[in-house]
Length: 89
Length: 133
Image (cartoon, rainbow over all chains, first blue to last red; front, side, top):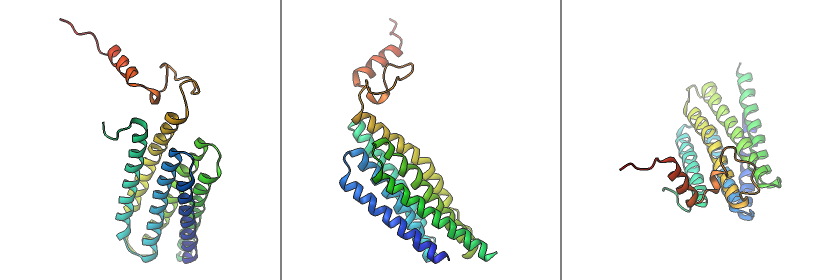
């Protein structure tokens, strides 16, 4: 039962990531692109945790943590750059 | 017992997958930019929360160790998602709105995102008391 549920979750998050990629390419405005990239980061975290669960190892959690931090910092940096033309003032 | 735990993990995984796909589909489907902000910041965060809960439960029930990294990731994501949403909304205000299209800013005469350097200087001068000789 867990195997089929995990396969379903893998498929869902992979499809979600493809939709985000589509949005990054075709978005009308830069704010949408930032949002789509941020969502891609979050979906990548979910995929990574699922992969670690499927393999039964703990090693992917550190990677997921780092991706979470990088995603947050890069989103804020993009937004700051649009808002102020500068990231660290 | 084993079956109940298995069912619980599977239910968390399926719910998480549905929330994840709904969040990303909303990003494509919704028309207005500020409506589009809702879908990924709420639904997708909840989806990741479901995956992390399932992973924690799976580790405790079947791998026989308690894993707390998931709690850290969940806490971090739930803390940072509103900040990200706030920044993207500010970008929207900065690029799409003007001072006239925004609602009243309460006690101030405009929203802080629309501040120009002159406004900042004026406010700074009004707040600091004049120097005494």
